[in-house]
Each structure stands twice: as structure tokens, then as C-alpha cells.
Length: 346
Image 1 (cartoon, one colour):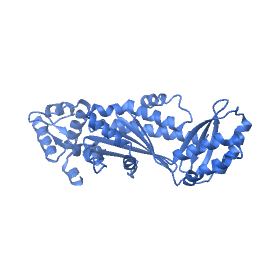
Image 2 (tube, one colour; image 1 turned 60 degrees about the horizontal axis):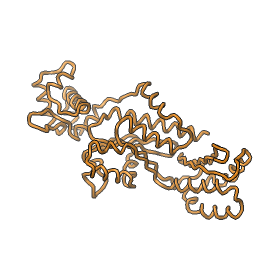
Image 3 (cartoon, rainbow, N blue to C red; image 1 turned 45 degrees about the vertical axis):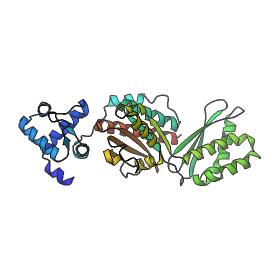
Image 4 (cartoon, rainbow, N blue to C red; image 1 turned 120 degrees about the horizontal axis):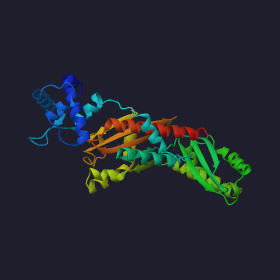
């Protein structure tokens, strides 16, 4: 790619940008006359045609029909994303609009992820996946209790890696401040305990408690559920319908099945970069399904909360507005991160 970058002059790069951005917007092959209309101080149509021939020879453009204009290839998109695409900044209006869609979200981490997934899918018209890896090697950093009803309490288990798991439990008696404090004192024994250890031993601990202190059982059962959940990879998918806009039914259903596999979760967490865009064959992560993502793009954004790392992935066709989606996925990741930090500070 370095050699190709040297080949492309400023004018050639500009022509490639104009073609790709217009094709993303319109979806039709772009001809030399259209390029001239869209460029400031354009060269002659003959010069533009020559440059388009050069870009085709480099493998950045292709001509669907003899008499039609050009459309970008996968390599053309890659070059555009890596070297030509301008970073988009969301306006205050766009940010406030996104934030307004998060109303009614409280201290429930799972509902935050579901809501963020749903919001992002709706504003970019693509399928969105939130993935949360298991935290076997973490320890319990804190357990918080929040009374939400006369007999209902929300338990928040926070690990050393920053992951938060919440569980609602109900009691057969009214929960006052005194009982809530008793719960907190009893659950202190789990602080500093390894999640993997608790995942194995929690049933024994719960059984021992059942014979001694029935009052505490609901809280201990909530801890057990939170620990079990922490040891599972959680995947949330929204906007599945958008896959069917550019894939046939059989292929779309196959992709949806693959998005929920461990291989896909491992794939989106494999990049060392905080944001990564995969195109075409770069998306193929299954030895037996080498063509399933051939005409797809996958944008992955990671976000950190302490040592804990989550990931948001967007899957769509190759003809998507990359700069717009990158800006929105990055902002959603920032919102989710801030909400999680707020929960941890309760």
C-alpha cells in the first residue's frame, strides 16, 4: 500500500475521494462528468477519465458495465479509509439527541448496553453487536445494594476489571435500612475473592448459608447469579433486519447465527487497536464460511473501564458512510463508558 500511496497524486486522490463519497451517497456508478461537477476547480473530463483508468489499473475502481461509470472496489475503500477519509465531529445537536434517547436508564448495566445497541442501530441503519468478555481472572472489588421497592433490592457486583453485573432480588419481608445494612455486612466476605473461585464454590457457600441464615439467602443467590453471568461472554444484537437489506435470506440468517458464536467475539476482541474497520475477506473468520462476509464491512470500537474492556461492532454493506458511523459509534462508546463509571461511583 505504501507504493500505491506514492503513485497517487493529490488530484488522483481527490478524484478517488469524490467517486467513493458520491457512490456511498447515491449508490450508482460515478462517471467523469459527475466527478467534474463535484470537484472545485476540476480538470478537464478527459483528464478525469485518464485518472479513473489509472485508479482502475491500481485496483481501486471497477467498471460494472462498458458504458457505465466506476464504483469502488474493496481495495479502493481500504485506501480511502486509511488515507483519505476525513474525521467527522458530531455536532452538539447530534450529541444531545443521542443523549436524550438514553432517558430512563438508571444503574442497570445490562439495560444500558441494550439501549445503546438499539440507539446506535437506529441512527446508522445497520446491525449492531455489543460484546462483553468473561472475567475469570478478576476479583470482586465491591458489592453495592440499592433498594428499589418495599421488598425489592438491586445488587451490583463490581469486579477488579471494572465489569458490573446487576441482579434484582425480592424478599418475603419489607427491607428497611437496618436489613439493607445487614446484607451489606454479610456480603463483605466476598470482597477480594476470585471470580473463578466463586463460580466453582458459590453453590457450596450458598448451601452452608441455607442451614444457618435464611434471611440472607436472597442476597446470596443474587451474588451467585451475578458470578455465573460474569463468567459468560455476553452478546447483544440489535437491528438484525438491516442485514436483509443487502443480503439474501439464507446468507443473512447464516450471518446472524455466526454473530453469536465465540469465534466472532474472539474476532472483535483480537485487534489491539481501539477502532478497526474490516472489509470483505478481512471479515472472514470462519474456515468453513470463507465467503459469508465477502461483501460486508465490520467496524469495531473498543472501550475501556479500568481494566475491563467491552466492544461494539457494526456490520453492514461495504457501501456505508464510514466517517459518520465511526463518529457515532465512538460517541456511543463514550456515553456507555461514562454511564458505567457513574454506576461504579454510587
